[in-house]
Length: 638
Figure 1 (cartoon, helix red, strand yellow):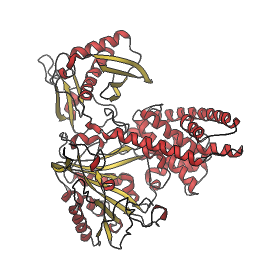
Figure 2 (spheres, rainbow, N blue to C red; figure 1 turned 135 degrees about the horizontal axis):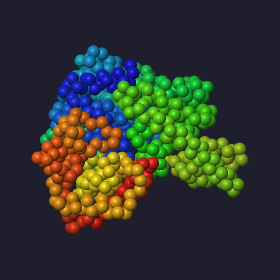
Figure 3 (cartoon, rainbow, N blue to C red; figure 1 turned 90 degrees about the vertical axis):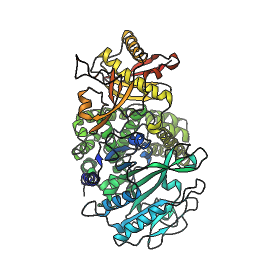
Figure 4 (cartoon, rainbow, N blue to C red; figure 1 turned 90 degrees about the horizontal axis):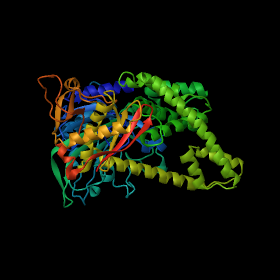
């Protein structure tokens, strides 16, 4: 079965059960300063878990494009990717466990209405008790799973296998199929385990579903295999989060009056059940893999080293294709830096396969074709993708030349420290393996263990930073951040008034310290233009205008002229924020009498008077170029 077919079946399955299909959010969130990338299906929907009404109602479903930068170094085995699609269904205060678990089990196992996986290959995990938090073992989920497996003739016994600290010393029994793990494995909140959650934060247990590929257990991961073992036999394909508790000031937990469901299932991992334990043998990789085989003269299954290089190129170029299609370009900061890193790692691996001329653009073309049915924007941006990849390949070849020069300087000293090797890799992009090879030729020893320790610390820091950025999600509703968000809307409209209606937002970053907007503009702003923009923004702020959220059909919002975020596909019902009331005038019955009108999920101030509290005024700190045809403004309220 193809990836496209599985996606289609999942969406149709939940649409038939009252869910509205919503589009994927962009890979890079335009109005979320807390994260570089969209890393899960739940992330763009977090405001609705925190109480805001979703425009499409209480049941929604989609396939969300996702990227996890922290997994870059993991790519190379049979199952890890940085880019993936997350299938998700959500209930905002509607149905709960009694509906969710039977539905997802039916989708996975039914040949008539779902996917048709052999239920004998499925294993599940549930939340074990947390005595400190006073949260009991999830017996409700256990009984549900026992019933569901029993209905298809599969024996399913429960095993309280224990915690990570205990080393999972108990092995699996022949009929064990339902396993309880502690909060590190089977609890979800933005802050992690219950003890780390602040008062007022929601969270809940989850239940994960694993597919057993039946591969031999590798004892280096422990004496016994179990669903959460990292040996590769079991692969997680889905997770139902039961958002049912809220932490109190005294550290205790109470049940939420409205409980939510958040299911996330890896589209590619689910589809793996039809091809075996190698995610890179899915149909979405066929065309790209064929290009690499033809240009390298090597087959994918030649040996482990060859397969690793293939996998890195296949994964990284898929992620790069979607990023480039959304307007991200290689740079030395934020999302652009991650894109540059992906491309350069792919170039190094193509060199390792013996491909020394430009090949990555041809690899990328395969993704535009295979995703054309659901994500046509990749194929539509094929020329731009090819151009950016070609430029980056040329730049990196020069970088490698520079790295060789720096390496020669170090070699001339007669010694190379682990810090030298690490700097060559992080600063010049010079491969560690190539440094090691040349040092061996010169009979210079390198402490590779120390180098790997430095790399490990670097990766841990990157992951921790990414987790910290996401920890706030869209719930960073600090008073000053909200003020800046509304000011950002006003600023965009002011820029259009001064520079022309062709000005469109191309990105943003809003914190409690300042706001930043990237916008399409042909040239540098003059001092007079900046002064005029500041005047307009301050005039609007001091008019004490109401800021209103309206939910309306997308077509109606478009007719009203509401600003749309670049690259976003919007659902049929949308949330629109206006600065100033939305109503027609006698002279212009079709034009809203609002200063600005934008598609947006919020949050915002209720009135612009909140922005100028304590006599604050809007001030542009800096205006600069960030890419061809794209300018950036950083501004503050002082």
